[in-house]
Image 1: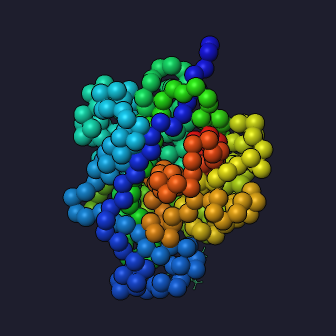
Image 2: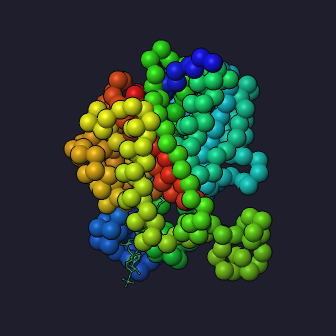
Length: 327
Ligand code: UT7
């Protein structure tokens, strides 16, 4: 079987206009700007207005990616949305996006892989293009985290924000997506979980009273896992792509904590301007963090066609994944 080369044809993102600063959070929680900045690197995050849901942000990001690639809605074969904050449990958020885009020829489904969702979705989109099954695949990471945050829990709610990013994949002459590594350890599921609302703990009066529909995280253990896995999985993806780490132009990491990003930067001996960081402005947008960072690096002119980058994520599952891509 002859494999087709996959490349990124277009990139886009959508960030809600409303800014919530650490100082705003000081007014409703026992926290401080100083604690949040020094422990996480976050200064502010974006939060959607009432009535805006995940598919709205996803659609806006997708439109921007389609526009940058010069591709119309009718040309899209498949829409994959990575999210842990879907509009509804069923149908998938991707189906709402498909309707809003009027992408009448596209199949649509969601991927749930925590903050690694975008990397998992990218690997799937790649496989559909590589096999010849699809010609135009939209891969979107989109989250409205604010609706699943417990605004009484200072250890989690200060960390996250809302946003969406999208890439449009298609066949190209020179290989764009060069190698992947994905992983999971379901025995650690409880480290980062929304316990209520599924078959294990259906919605009930007590599940609501006990705040089971919000994100719960054991920050410290997740932190240690993240520092270890980010370096390991990036190296494994470089090995899969047959690329030495000295060839890497950019690292586009998941934005969970500036200290985690910094540890990866040092491991790969990259100068600060070769690591894309936006956690200061947006917090952790889960599946959306990586594609938004990618879009901003391209739009600002830092990341150019021909550059070699590693995209790396980790999160609930536990899951992890990295992709080595020539833009
Ligand atoms: O994207 C998915 C993956 N997620 C991650 O990778 C997140 C990884 N974890 C982290 O980034 C860090 O663990 C956190 C930023 C969440 C927490 O930082 P930490 O240095 O691990 O702090 P901690 O949880 O050990 O808490 C230290 C102290 C505690 O007080 P005591 O027990 O030492 O008196 C907390 O109660 O900080 C306290 N604390 C806060 N203080 C002020 C926790 N949250 C806050 C807060 N403001 N918002």
